[in-house]
Amino acid sequence: MTDRSKIIFGNKISSSAVKSAEKSKQKYIRKFGDDSGENYPAKIVPNICLNKPLNVYDIRVAEGEGGEKFDTDKGIIVGNIRMGFGHYRISIAIASAANALGYTPYWMDLNSYPDTTCTKVISAQNDLYSMGSRLSQKIGLFNKLVWEPLNYEGFRKLTYNASDQKNAELMAPVFKNVPKDIPIIGTHVWPAQAALHAGMKYVVNAIPDNWPMALHFAEGSVHTIQTYQAYMGYRILNGMQGKDILKPMPADSLVYTGHYVDHELVSNIDTDCAARLDRKKKGEPMRFLLTIGGAGAQQELFIAIIRHLIPYIKKKKAALYVNVGDYKNVWISMCEKIDELEKLSTTHFGDWNDTVSFAEKAVTGKVEGIHAFWHENIFEAVYCTNLLMRSSDVLATKPSELVFYPIPKLFLKHIGGHERWGAIHSAEIGDGTLECEDIPHTLQMIDLFINESLLLEQMCGCIRTNNSIGMYNGAYKAVKIAASMRSGKQE
Image (spheres, rainbow, N blue to C red):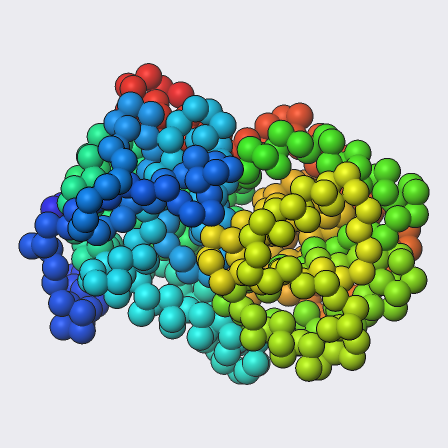
């Protein structure tokens, strides 16, 4: 196993930082054990939620009979973790594009193997991140002194990558019996790093954010980028070691692809934008999609938005979708705090067929009132938002992975400083608002969307223009890069 923590793209890491990285790894070994000697099997089974629409198969680390054989010619692994909903959603976009291009997507979630050191390490860090996310919304001083600096500058440092590389060595054993010549696209850096440590030959590292951070480096992979701003920052390792001028990434290690978006959404952009404009022209209720992320933060803001929309909903000037993901307690809490919410709402809870049916009919049908969605299954919880996007007019979301989707967007306050750059990008290409940094500005923007047509017309026009130059084709391009690495034919 190559030690990737001492030199990163030709830049030597200080001995103290290397020692700190090794201490981090040893801390996890003491806590969770070292299973590098284990021989974990790899079993292929259909994904319960995504197999039917996207032909997705899960890679399980499990004993037992049954299971499919790996397709070493057309198989592409989507390596991911559940840390919030964002990395799962990017994975779904990659899997969707792979399926549309004729490949078989294999879903490999490193946070789904409970008896492995790999999952224990990831789960511990995920729990810390989720807790920090929620605290940042409740305690202003914690957000200012800890959370914002960590997400904005802490993850940016090259030394942070050195520590991650050491920890990722503990994640490599789950790849033991995965064929090494199947390409893997990591939608979080840890699967990409772990795959390289495990000897996987063809690794693509699909970087999610628009703020360049050394956190996302997996040297040895091809890094794909969604924006040119991020491309420039990553190419020169901008600010990743203070004001030092660092050696740049090699040109063949970094590729601009455009936004990672599902085939089902990209292929229907013109149709869906036309439907949005037609609904506005006819005076139908403007459909807002409010999606609650995997950390379950920002509840106070969601409550304010829903309260503000209720009078519009009663007058049939607005309609609302609320996806609380797999956080049913969030819905219960909001119903306790918002008068009439429960009475005005139709709930789509736990019945995936009902959710799919509703989403399909809403694309061309009428929608009124409030529709709430909750699903215990994580895939259903995340994919629900993707299905509802086609029939929505405005997506209200913090500026994270949903920044890059081809739907008019109202940006809520960020959680973690790195997210603000996503809103800046979207506003500049015209398919989203500025980030609304407080509740009054958020409500002002809702009023503008409902009471005039200009914002919607402008955003739909920009989405169509962006689509004409391939801006939303990043998922297809990432898949083609992975496939070309296997074939030896450069994409």
